[in-house]
Length: 111
Image 1 (cartoon, rainbow, N blue to C red):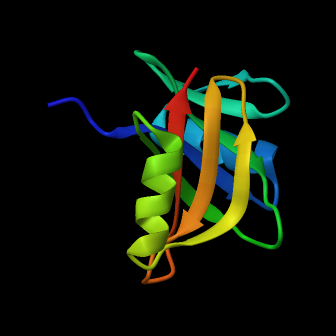
Image 2 (spheres, rainbow, N blue to C red):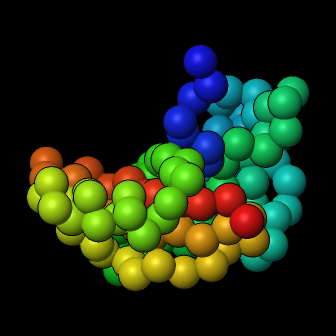
């Protein structure tokens, strides 16, 4: 089974320091993405490290979905809360939500 998690974003108070920490601690490579460092393994990049927004820090998993609008609507119906409205990134469109337990996650549609 392919993982439904397509990407991770680490929102950090210091993106370069954080990227360096994971590179030195876990042996990942760091490459410059479009405005932020990206962590890579032998299979290529799997995560970005970006400046924290609105005081949030931590990892946000990006779940790939076929229909962003339908998935966002369903998440809202089930108690999810949108914390960042839909926007376009380098590889597709996404929305960041909070689940009923308070954990951040993103829904992402390729393209």
